[in-house]
Image (cartoon, rainbow over all chains, first blue to last red; front, side):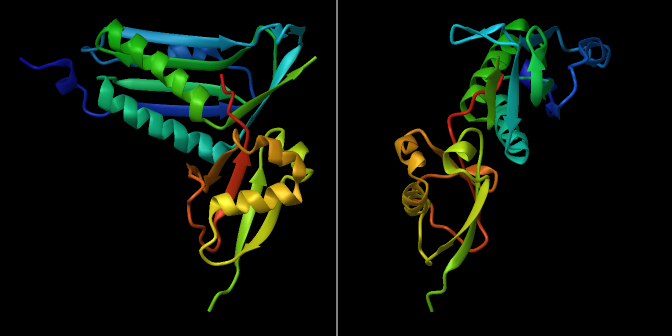
Length: 139
Length: 85
């Protein structure tokens, strides 16, 4: 009997850095899953109206773009060795993102929810540790 | 022969404000390390000195440790802890 690992040939990876609002309906409409996949987890990170107790109107994100892409690739490669993920799509906004708008959108597709949730959590944890993006609150 | 190497340095996030510049170039003697380069930059831009422990350093698009030996043409980046998401 084949395990979930055997049916996943190579993980689809997609990273977009954009100055534009994240178009979630378009991203969801673009979802593709093969018949062996049973879990699609997605996460949207949204700018809160306060930072360190201070009211803010937006966050300005700055990224070292070439290194952002490279560091996400390294994280994806690590994820691929840990879980049988079919696809990861990630969008991160750069520039000014107003309160209540998404700065991050991530989708992970896997055979089962356990690995999809775990991989998504790991991806975001690692992003916050190594991916060179910085934020500046704007009041 | 012990010619100096030209190393281009970029600062990101609030390190640009601390240094007062976004980029600079340093002539580094052969065998010079990333740690040695930080020491020089901390003298040149004293506001970087308190950031010594938390500073992240990369060569090209890869993180490197302080004992990395620089090569001519290396592009070095210095920045504070990252905060994506």
